[in-house]
Image (cartoon, rainbow, N blue to C red; front, side, top):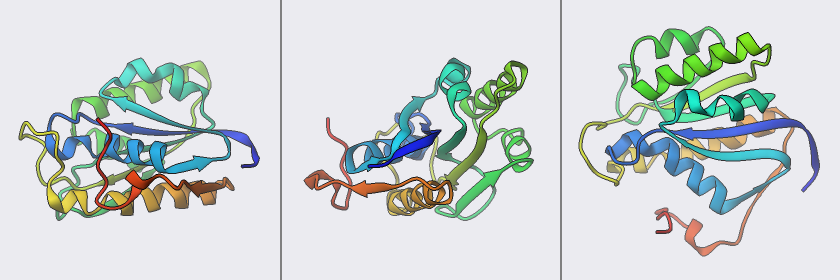
Length: 176
């Protein structure tokens, strides 16, 4: 892999205990298990930490957030949000960790270090049922979200390669 001059953080956020709310974490797991990236690219399982991720977020030049995004669309619809779209969507109250994420980005402004941020998401079907399994419609979109992350890396001029890991075949099953 090549030396990358940019510090890029891929941040999967969500709560894996509430069905589709965990999609960002599942994407981060598969990226970490199934791909190698240029130096300077970090994949982080941010869970529901929100403001506690300030240190990680403020170190990034580019931040790619993966999450369930309630946007009033059909379950499984994919979204790419950037710039002014981010606070408008998050303030529409998607979930508490997204509000905390916005606060962390605002605090980065106060520190004078705001990463170029893109949120990649999928419209969830179910974020209320207590389950560690994604709904089938959202599980089918995991590879599409990964493709969106890889496209963002390409846009930023970063390379990656898929590993030979057997667990990376679909359907993806995270290791216990």
